[in-house]
Length: 327
Ligand code: PAP
Image 1: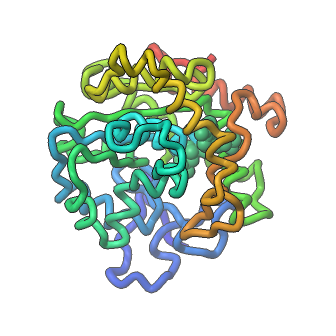
Image 2: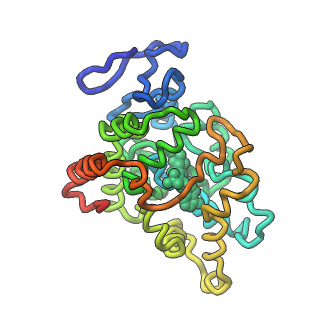
């Protein structure tokens, strides 16, 4: 197995990717023998080892266009939902949310409507992004600290970030991982999250980075919370629409467009579509894996009180003084 140095960095790695252990390290009990799912420490963040060249390439060569919107999140924080809502909101001129049968979200998974930059670059398909007409809607799981400055310092490229209560995020991640590896241990995954070494970790730095960016520049970074969206989906869709420069007109309000978008993107609606049913396998994850309960507070069914206290304490310590809390 690859060794880590004092800073936790791994490397150098062989130029040829022969699938050997030197490419990264497995997440304890989580990703097993498959090097495709191993993680590497890259510029202070833990990322999928196979994404490192893609991230380096994004940093060097991604050129945003004015009007681009990038959805950013740590996995299992509400990415799928936000992708659906943002797509339905921004594309409503072309695809009105009431023309039910024709809407792309009824035949495609939200991840097929809004691509992930790291995944696309790692597949060598970055030219597909260039081919997209503006305004483009893209996504990333990268930390704010490793975004290219062409995104992070560009007021014409907006970022919509979503975060989720960390205990629920861990539980959701565990359920997701179990779909691929049924024997994955909850305590191993929990430990990795607490150590900051799970995918896109440390999670506190991820959330903190976007929180600070949003406070410094609220016109460029919108900070959303999954729990707020559950409480008030319509209010958050309006906020999102204003942020991307497409507020709902009085006529749209009158026609109930906001409610149509909320309904179209609801968990019940998306989960029961043919495209998102368990049989519709797609790589590397099947579409149905992205839909489960969609509730706040499910952690109580999986975590011991000691685990909950430990994670709460980590969050409190790491975010102390930031003005952000999950209490
Ligand atoms: P990703 O980062 O890999 O895309 P992401 O979408 O962030 O995953 O997380 C999946 C969670 O969002 C699941 O939560 P759960 O495990 O606690 O149930 C999933 O159910 C929830 N989710 C997916 N789509 C929706 C939706 N339309 N409305 C509400 N929650 C949703």
